[in-house]
Length: 290
Image (cartoon, rainbow, N blue to C red):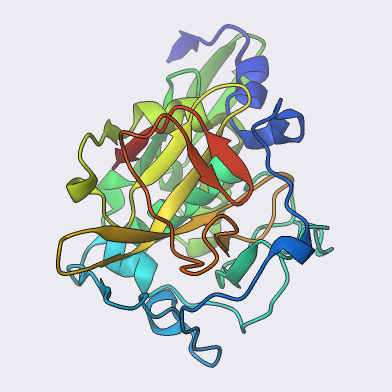
């Protein structure tokens, strides 16, 4: 089938964080000298998000259901403490003082897995490992839907000018490598606009949970994912945030240079006019869930 995707290539480029180098005041640069010590205990020898980062004083981790996306994220394996953020070509980025952890997952060898793509990657990995194959489905920015079930059965997308068509041209292949090939296709044509449309808004702080996202959809756009939640006796929550960035680079857990005493935890409010994170300001604050 063919569908009109007017200016697909242009929209694809502007709809994710691929233009974040021109953030017009929304990109944040913080020098290493401004970063102070946090009072939060970090267990440098531990290898998962939940094990490595203790909750601040008087807070405790919020338990997630074992089969949930949130549980998958908070128990995600991390690289050894102190690991650098590496670009897709294996070289380190220049900013190495605004993260506290690196997720132990590949970036690929192309400049594809950027901000929205990093969220899509983690979501897709969860669904793949949970064998929820029918749910592995992501829209291109154009609105065209690419599903893993179609791709593993040999259906491929073909872009020709302003149109895209889907045809069966390959044999059945449900291997993990083919799954990664499918994701590279999604990364090429999806972005913050499509991801925003595939998620639902969150209107209450009490509803924020691990696996939710904070997103700016458009040009330029960006997104971070909640990687952990803790709560005190009064019900107040704090949050860990993780992201990808441009150029394609390691998925990393952010430090909090604005409240160093609780770093890397963040105090988030769905009703805030803006939300500052270590490398980006979200204005307005647009929290959403899958």
